[in-house]
Amino acid sequence: MNNIHTVDEYSWFSLYLTQARASFAQERIYLDEQIRFSSNKTTMNNMYVIPLLYRLSSMIDHISITRLHHAFQSVITRHNILRTALYIDGANGNITQYCLDANTVLNNNMKSYAFTIVNFHNDDSRHMNEIIDEILNQSDLFDLSKGRVIRCHILRYYRQSQNSISYENDDLLTENDHILISVHHAMFDGASRSVFLRDLSLAYQSDDSLSVDDNSLNYIDYSVYEHIMDMSLSREFWHSQLEEYNIERSLSLPVDRQRSSTNQQRSGLASSAQITFDDEICTSFLNYASSHHLTLFQLGLSIFYVFLFKLIHGETDLCIGSINANRYRTELQNLIGMFVSTLPYRLEIGSNWSFDELVQHVREKCLLILEHSHYPLQHILGDNQLNQSNVSFLETMFDSISVTKDMKHLSLNYANLEQIPLEQSVEVAKFDFSLTFLYNPSSDNKRLSCRFVCSYDLFEKSTISKIAQRFQYVFEQLFQIQSSSIPVMNVILSISKLSLILPEEAEEMELVVFHRLENIVNEAPASFAQARIWLDERIRFDPEKPQVAIYNMPFVYRLQSDHTLSVKQLQQALQLTTDKHLSLHTSLHFDIQKNLLIQRVITHENENNNSMFSVIETTYETDEQLNQILHDEKRNPQ
Image (cartoon, rainbow, N blue to C red; front, top):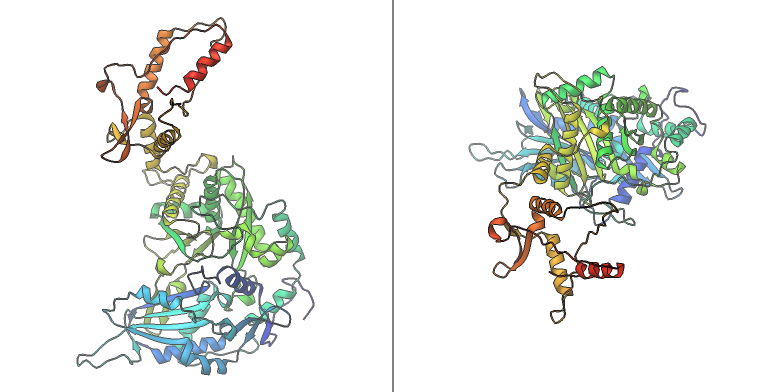
C-alpha cells in the first residue's frame, strides 16, 4: 500500500499482516530508550515500563491463580500487540514490528517467563515496595526483540496452616495479596489500561478464551495506515507553530547542576514533590474550568505557563512538550497499543495579560493542535533539521490525568482489587522537568493533586520541594478563597503581579529590611564574604612593609557652585545613617580559642566615644593636591 490518503478519507480495515514497520510512537520510544537511557549512568533497567499494581481488597470468593493465568493468556491471544517483537531490520534500517504466533508465545513463554508467583513471609524484612522495585528493575523483565513485552507477577504472603503444613503451592489468592502487571510502553499507553482490564475481567469471569475476530483492525494495521497518510496540511501547521523559535534554546530553570552539552545520557533518578489541594481550592479550580468552557488539561497547562513565566523571570516565548492520546478515529478506541504523540506547545505570552486572557490563548492553541496531533514528532524534528537529543521542549513536560473508575479498580468475579500507587522508590525521571495534574473525582478529600517529577541529574530534591511550594502558592493566588468560603478569582490582574515569594519568605525579608530580629546577638561568626575579604587582605600584606587598604570603597562628591553645606548637619546625618546600619559599626577579629573570624557590633554602650566615625577636615589649593589626598585616603588602613 503505497498510496497516500488523508486521515478520514476511508474506513480502516484489517490488512492481515504479521510484519510491518513500527509506528511512529513505537520508533520514538525504542530510539529514546537506546539513546538516552542505555549507558552505565542509567540506574533503572526499564525506563519505559508501565506498572499496574492491584491489591485484593475485598472478596466473597477467592481468586484462582490458574484461572487468572488462563485469563491473562486469553488477553494476549486477543491483542497481538502484546506478543509483538520490535527490532531493527538490517536490510533497510527501519524499526520493524513482528507479531508472533499466539500458540508459540504461550507455549514457550507463559510457563517459564511471563507469569510468575512470588511468595514471601509476613515477617520478611524486605518491604513490598522493595520487592516491586527489584522486579521492575530486572534486566530481563522485557526482551523486545523476542516479543517479551508483558509480565504478570503474583505477590502473595506465604501462609501456613495450624499444623504447619505449607500452603505455598496453594492455588488461591486471599485478601492483601497483590497482582503486578508490567507492560513495555512501546506496546501500551494510558488509554490501553481500561481495554486490558476490561478484557482480563471478562476472560476471568467466563473462564474461557476471549473471542478473536480475524477481520478486526489490529495495532499493526494502524501503523501501516499511519505511514501512508497525507500529512501535508499538518506539516504546514507545525512549521507555522515553530517559525522563528530557537528550538534548541533551553528554558532558564533554577538547576543545581548542569548537564554536559555533549553527553545526553540520563541516570533516570528522580527528584519529586507532590501537592494535594484542599477541597475548596479544588472546587474553585473546577468551577473556573466549567464557566470558561475549559478542559482540566487546558486549565492546568495555563497555570503551568504562568508559573514558568514567573520562574524564569518573565521570559515570554515559551515552548514545552505535552502529550496527546492520538486516538483520532473510532476504530482506535478499543485497541491496546502505543498511540500517544508527544508535541510542542508554544505560547508567546503578553507580559501584561491577565490570567483570563492567557487561558483563552491556551484554549485556542490546544484546539488547533488537536486537529494536527497525529503528525509525528519525528517529522516535526526532521522538518526543522533537528534530532530527539537536542530539542529543549522535550525536557519540560506537562500532562493531565483524569482517573476513571475502571482505572482504580479491577473486578475478578466476586473479588475486588484496588489500584495501589507506586512508591517514590520506583519513580523514574524521563524528562528534566515535568508536571502532571491528577484529578480523581471519586476521592473524598484528595480530588485534585499535582506532581513534579524532575531529573536528579539537574535538581536536588530540596530544590524541587521548594519549587512545588512556589507553584502551590501561585495556584492559591489564582484560586483564592474568601473567609466566607465563596470562591473569588484573582484572575483579572496581570500575571506579572503574581508572586513566587512565599509568605514566610516575605515576612522574613520584611524583618531583615525594617527590623532587627530579637534573637540576633551582637557577636557571631563572620559571613563567608567577610571572611574571604579579611583573609585576602592578610595574604596580600607583607608585615615588614606599610599596609595598604585594598578594599576601601571611596565615595567622592563635589559641592556644586553657589551651594553651601552645614558640616554639623552632615555629621548628624552620617551619625544617624551609621546607627541604622549595623554593618557600618561592626568590627572583625580572629578568635584564637574558637579558631573563627568573629564579627562584633560596636554599640554606644561599649564605646566611650559616641561617634561611630571620624570627620577629618583638610584644605587644598590645586587639583593635584586634591588627587593626592584622595589617593592617600583610599589606601589608608586606619
